[in-house]
Image 1 (cartoon, helix red, strand yellow):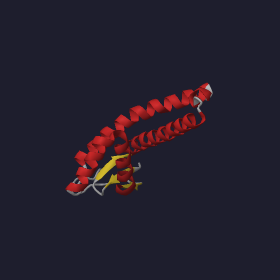
Image 2 (tube, one colour; image 1 turned 45 degrees about the vertical axis):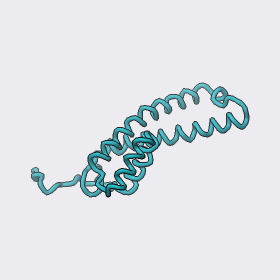
Image 3 (cartoon, helix red, strand yellow; image 1 turned 180 degrees about the horizontal axis):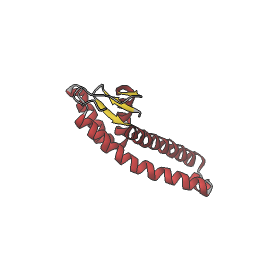
Image 4 (cartoon, helix red, strand yellow; image 1 turned 90 degrees about the horizontal axis):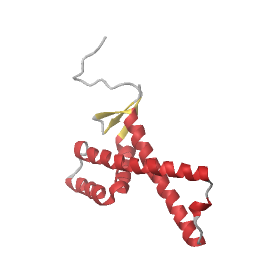
Amino acid sequence: MRQYMLNNKQTVPRFVVVAVASWAIALAAVTIVGFAVWIISSWMHVDALSALPKPLLLLVGLCGAYAGLGSICLWVTMCVYWIAVERSSAGVRIGWFLALLFGLHYGALFYAYRVWRTGIIKMDTPVRLADSPVLG
């Protein structure tokens, strides 16, 4: 069973890591596609979305809906992480609070990237804590 450890203290189930990663990837992808469509539409003076085939437009819409719901979940998850796990200095905590407060889902996206990039370790074996009994 694959688990993850955050900041050498808390274990995180694999499904939480996969969910947060999928929300972050969907939000980043929809943002990049949205900027590309906006740039193409403004420079070429055409409606780029109406030029897309219907199946691709449906796929973009579904990805956008998932990214919208995922951005809310990502923001809540990162707020919980900030409250429960983040133990940096007061200045760093205030900075991330302001990023979450004013940056909303993009602040949460950058915060999640920083947390998962620097503070998570993949482990292939379950962690046995010192207080947990040995079974078997």
